Length: 515
Image (cartoon, rainbow, N blue to C red; front, top):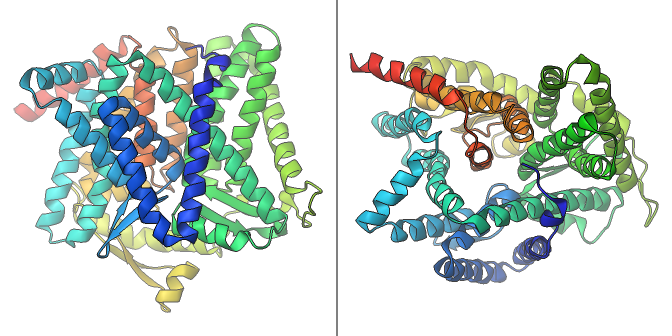
């Protein structure tokens, strides 16, 4: 996959970027003027419906754009007698309804499923789907709170977007290019928003900061926290997508450099990669940092495998350039002399953040959760306790202490990602998920010879996500699910012997259960 930069930064790209900017601006206005929120929500829904009837894939692109920038999906919402409907849920219902309406005819439905069967990952996903459905019934069987079951299971329903996504991706050649433009524009916007937020808070733009901060927190877009050394953590959940972006740009620049010499394309990709890496650094998410670090270590292994030991010094050189450029960009934004920056120490903030002090509220709460969560997991270790299962533990989070002075907190959502999946769908469900992800990794590994750039980026991106999920759950979150679906689309055109190997494993497992 050799994507032309001129094709990415096209007129369509800038048009999408402009719409994304206006959407976030209107979301801020909707927070300041609550009456505007419902109006904007209805306008977006009606516009999406109209465009979807005109061309169904346009509705899906709007939905994906919201996922790329919206974090939790509440940039806009509709409050109906206490029932809050997020923009993401509404857009999801539109996309799925339009797709279902177009496939109600028997012939069309048959064609859609035949088309879906061409997705070589579909059958490897079925075991996971079985255990997810079983988790729903087990949640009801164990009399878990129905509201908890609904919102817990709701995230897994996001996998259904695979049907329209694969359908339009296979049938509509223009959809592929438009999807790339939407993703690229969203990543540029996330970078701009991150740098702007860092600039605003390190330069004390009074009269704006309080409302902006409240908007970020209320919509669930992210978190802004003052760190040691006067620095600020600018964290948006959607920054997750900048990790594969950073890895792709690094690998693309490295691939060109190792095969040729430093040229304009290498320099340009290193610069764009530095912007993405800078955003990941500014996020101050240790999970993101760890995921990126492990992916880089795997990248060094791939360089040795593909190019040999002699290329390792150039590889380290490219990493050094990207890291230095990233830090320079961050310092330039934080210490820009106009209109007067505070005295900050990025070095102190980075050093303190990299230390996992048990006294820190977030770390203390996470470790406090581990034992009661583990005990609950072992209660129904094989099949799980079902969705909506709760655990009570002692939290040091200041937000929890405001409502519960003793610190006792009961929830069905947990920071320990793999233990949460194990708790809800059992060890068999977790193994089914690993089986599915293993298929993707194996496919990428065997595709290294056919399309090295796509395969390498896939391996690095998926490794980073798997590592991140240990401490920050994304594999059972719409952002992580979208992340995986995009990876499968990238690999969908690759053909390798991995299919035969994994189909053999799959057949043996099925034959065992048939006995």
